[in-house]
Length: 343
Image (cartoon, rainbow, N blue to C red):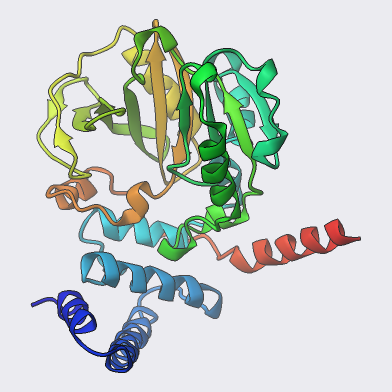
């Protein structure tokens, strides 16, 4: 029986004091394992004290989710590679591109304004949004997380109270750090309102997620039926469906090569230029391409799909060069910004 399952059963069965002691012992055991692995990894990787907190976070989350530690020295699969990137490919531009508002600047610079979804409003609080000035349909979401998106097809029956509670909760959250997705921590939280693409269709447009290594598209992930029961298909750069299931969603069969496929690849590659790895999410509506967002560690690097090991070979990148850690610098900048704001 996996340790996590054993502990879950024991926690459920025993008195609270027993559960606390058991949890403490398990935590100490995991920390001892992490310490031992840190010492071994440090012999082969340029780990420093500035990596340590993030290293611990990544390993604790990996153990909790997958009951395994990542292999950072000889990456086995997609998940291992994502954890390697978190530690050894830290770039200031990643924070900008993680921010759903700031990334619009990169879209404008790299591929032009035509690929931007229209932005109606940006506010610090949900209550500051002037809904009277908005069109009938729109999308509300925060800029620093994943999963806060609210689709409004008709604002006349929009439950503002429920939406406000959801958005306010998201704005208060330090998203991503628990899984080591460090860039989200340094995005100033905002709520944004943007255009709802193709509202007459009654469903959200399909999502084309392009996986890029060194600025080159390796393959795409086609996500459809996103409003109901999401389906996924892996698609080769040539537009041919591939075998495999990465995220463990329901396998789909609906992919058809859009007319703008070659242009989509070009847009994704221009957006991805300069990064070892990034996923560029695009939409295609009425043969027009829109950039959705950029994701540097898809699913946090904790994918449960049965083919994530083979997929890791497809998106392999150079692991002989390392960027120095920038988290201490970002923390100092964050503190200085807060101090300046209090003056």
